[in-house]
Length: 422
Picture 1 (tube, rainbow, N blue to C red):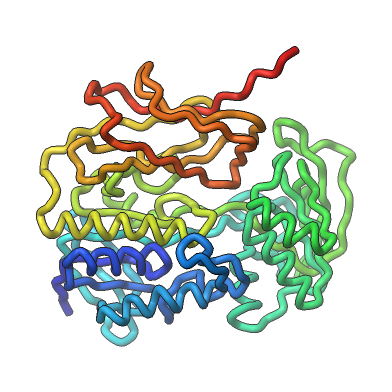
Picture 2 (picture 1 turned 30 degrees about the vertical axis):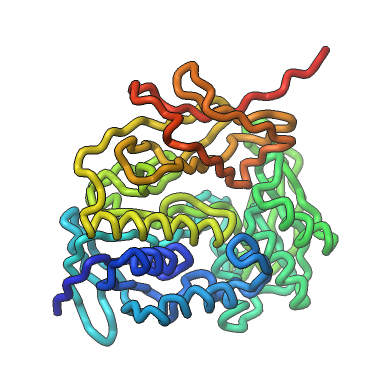
């Protein structure tokens, strides 16, 4: 079976649904959304906790409530979508193939593609947890899926490795369901989750956060019996003699997410600093007509941010299909400076239609009383004073593109610590 569409969108989470609505509202009607799961929404379906929609709707919603509003926007416009549609391949010519139990293999010829396939969780194998491989060791997202969507209690005495947001939220969720969460161990000397989640999910429930600690050994053959937790030094190496045994029947891993970017990597699209694709300010990759947004581009703190980014990708895809963009780009590089782990986009098109350059970045480590400086050569474009800057919190700064000069000097984002008087 074959289909011909203007825009194909891979993934129906916040970014994918936002892209579809934005493209439709800009005048493109022939849109196809492909979602591998049985329902629209991606991971939003399993996020039954509140905290969504504060930016978008100015009220606090659960993940399913947030999703329902987005899905209704898609349905009201009559945008075509397929669930249980697993995309198996994509070519630089924007030809993709998906597998569906209802339709079999389907080949789709698109004029533009928006990749919004989300992210994958790091597993015990990915971080090389020492010890055996008993039952009871699982990523936090899988534990959330099992509990919230399937109704399975994953353990009664639980230890959590990693202070990512899903792990913190699962510490609270499991506590509410009657499990004893012994502690959360974090290998870094600071928490990797949002401050509000650390307070609401750990402090409010009396759950210890063990900074500069990790799992030294998993104990158990058939079923997890205990974990040994050890301190680490400033090089993140275990310190001998610091091990402590915690008896538990579940080890939940919240040790990071990886952009699910395999389809784009397979066709030679250059990978960016955030492990997604390298993009310009229209969120277009190095292959014309292929755009990307959401957690497949970089990991977001809030679904609201992913939704906004999806809208930008959908608008850009619509402009591409309608022939509104110039063929000749004038690209300036955007580089990381001191204290920055990554910044997006990697390029800005001076000939592009966007009047505002929206820079998204994360600090490499925590800072207090600092400033963020954005420069092009010696020209200071913007400086923002920050009381605190955390790696766990995505920063977004906007700059009018009219301030940029076409001198081929890159834009550099840096953290400058405040000088302390002796």
